[in-house]
Image (cartoon, rainbow, N blue to C red; front, side, top):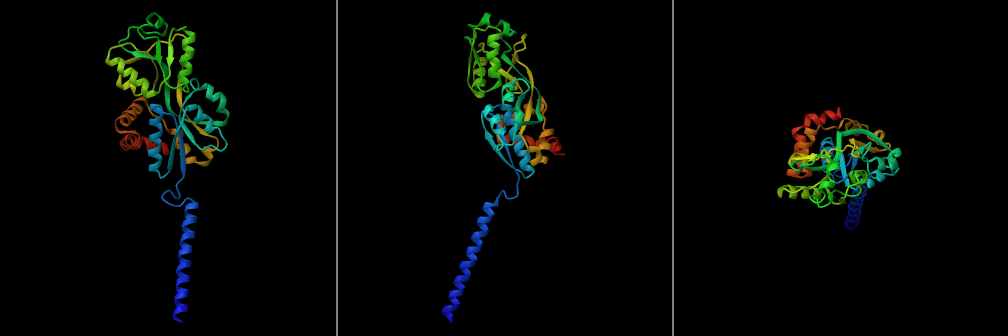
Length: 292
């Protein structure tokens, strides 16, 4: 009898363990765990200073509202392409320069995307020089090509401003070559030139933290090659229906130039996550109003 009771006891323990394992597996398969029950928002973003700032501010604000946020860093063309897919892995992009700078991307993908807001409403692009440079117009560049070493320091070829600069070289018949680099490399070239009081011309845009850190100016653009845009917030189709509260937040998500520069300054000093979190904490009333 004792052996029989022990045998049943072992079977009961085994059965209990089996039930626990099944429940655990079901929890994992249904999304259980630390993020159980949280809605997931996926933000696609390029490695541009203002785009990083918009993205990380949105991340900390949404996480404060108990959303799960995934960030995916991609080149702009890939962002537009991904969001246009019917099975897109992304939800939203906060730094679409429209209607001009990213016109080619919009022509390719815009009929499959939705503009839901503006993260910044006065985006400008152009050619930028230190303020001590004694020319004021793109038309004057050729006369001083040697002082600029015949180079315009640009960013990646996937950026809209890269294409605009190629048009500027043609429109103004410039004896210059556009050098493709990255945003940080471009700023490093500007920093080095200013420290040595040298002439340099770069592709530039507002908003960008370089306007806070350097005494610089746009060259006048009488042929209007470089347009004025907004930094639009673009989503995949169906996003607003799937996540109405988050879509409503992005419809109101908008920073002034002063707010954006202070956010970018915090990120520059403290890093993306910490800088955005600290700025959000100091400006919580402003950001939380976007949820209302």
